[in-house]
Length: 400
Length: 223
Image (cartoon, rainbow over all chains, first blue to last red):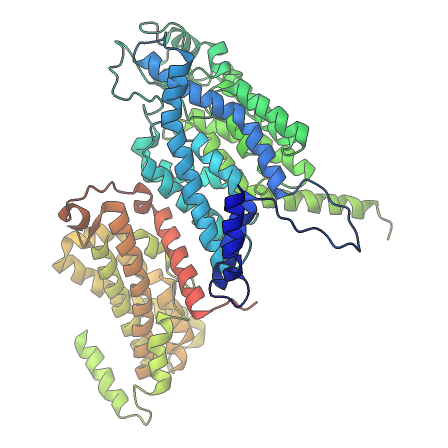
């Protein structure tokens, strides 16, 4: 540690004003503050009151909230792998190891590419490097399938950071969620690698007889065309090779194939608890996304029509990525609605559109990504109407 | 068409101001840079998204639009003092459609496959904002010579963006340029980027072109 400090101090003068590497001062500064706590303090005079919660702290809180999803995801990647190749009795260590081999490189690529671009833009634009990418860099791996090609992760991250964020002016200026931009990019650019039966890492292993990589959502969508009951299809799924893969409790726990971090509703709820308790995420958005999806599910149940529409509404809450999207994506404070009443509308519409897209659009098996991106765009409009409604109400009360 | 162009050139030579004066040269160069019809005036975007999945239709479309804009500009400019201002739009439309139909028939006769690929977009040049915009903004108030240059300049500006967009879309979307498989010939495997084949991909590229262009020439919107 001391060696590192000395090395940094030794080169520091090169980056100061008027020196030869002046241009790269912010890259140096970012590296320095990343490694060590800055030793600058306030002046003796003047206000000394400070809130400890700055951007860095906020980001770290969200990272902590994501840890349960990440750890469970790593284990689950291994678990699904061994289920698929018929070795359900593999040890916890083996499962974690397989999962780590798949997941860690994705995380490294995501952070490496994203932070690299942040550094370049910070140097070009002469501003300190922001911590904005800390959360995004972790969210991107969590919404990827476990066997996504690594170069695609890199390309998607670069696209999301440049087009989604830097084009709009950097951290805090983006219109749409950056992690979802990365995913949407892959979804439209390389659809074969991020839809269909890609959700289980198979590796070189021979899959067990009768194995199918279908997800609950694709089963439900198939049921709509064949007319079989969704619940029976889900409960009987995998009876040949592993009984009861898609029972409700399994779906809630997240023992199913899917994107790395999205599978477990339980882990997402733990994350939601951390976010809400620390004040980093809005409980209104989380609750309203869930209730919007549930309400839409109930409405479709009432209308009936096909098997997917008749699927019990509470199933919508545990299949697909609804929980993960509601907790970690919709609550992104930059892209969500800012007004309190707006948050309710924003969340409800996300839930509603998610179920609508799931049930009625066969091209998109999962709707949460597109629903959140759509509502990100509409969030400022919602805020505008909430504010002007408030103005109108207060003007009526006023006696001028 | 070529005779029409030659005739106007002759007429202009007799005028006192030389055709390629400094001011007139600007008519060609401005649309390429600070007055680009797509990236600055934001006109004709619809066709720029529609025909640029490959280079070949993009270049044909660019030529077609350049011909139509230039020749309509010249014709309108000749008639500018006789067109009653109350019905000028319909007169302009009639003249533009005359050229569009000629271009359309020519394409159909000589490059039938490309014509099919361009489908309605050749016909839709009639309603292209660039053509109408140039007629209204320039040809109605200027002599035929400068009008010709203005039409050509805007056609080039439009074509330039179309070619840039088409180049990146074909290269990134299909790994080819003018149908020539670049990556395969180098012995590399290239997985086509599906986003680039969607109109959204063209939007992103136009956006990036605007970004690069504005950071190079320092152009800012005036409020």
